[in-house]
Length: 357
Image (cartoon, rainbow, N blue to C red; front, side, top):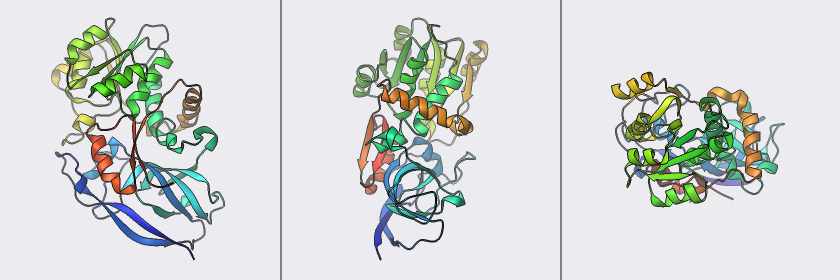
């Protein structure tokens, strides 16, 4: 009987609600091997890729502050949002050995794991190889929750009208969601797209690779002045991934009747604030006086639009209208380092972990 030598990432200690995560919050260690003997309705899965997401930061606290994710427990295997796996053996009629799977919502950071799909704890979906080709990790970026967040956020909350000469500003623009949001905003009809990011390398990619009209390095440039220069017709849509002072600066220059898509607030994820964090009185007054909408966007509220959304994204990707970049950490043992780097802006595009082949 075959045994699979196993390992996982466990959660060792909490950074505290007002502290940054560090690598020592995580530990890679071996765990009991898995045998091929399966119960009825069970599948044995080998993990190939893991998604690393800023939203996981709240799971490091004793209380996540949100209803749809539970806190990680000390000493237990970390569970992420998404992963890609291969079925090694199955006793479930709907799953076949060698199938590739998308693992959603409670994906264990583990080399191998057993799962009963019918218990609902982990969601499994057979991967469409015709769509992802030889690049299955696309299901974690453009063709997964990340891509859907960008697409549905822009489409449902951006109020973009083709030909209306609208300008879109994206913060965290060189990240997984932001890089897609800018491209999608253009495809939906924005005439000008501006990206905010934290390095000259990222700025160059935004304009030369992803096709943004302008990129602003918030670490080196005067953001308020650069927005005046690059948005002469005003700011009509703001895809907000970061919050904090950067977002306040953008909102101060937004046009009347414009729209903020509240996607993420990574600048305050390491602080003890509710989500979404409260705004200062002057920013609230600007929103009120200019009739600016600022709607929190949670992609999980739109499950009925996932399939058509993925179909649209897949078509754009196949036509070369969307471009994707990944930052890949090689090996499960690199998971903690990859998470900490991503939270500090070390990634370009989607941060993933390549676990096995």
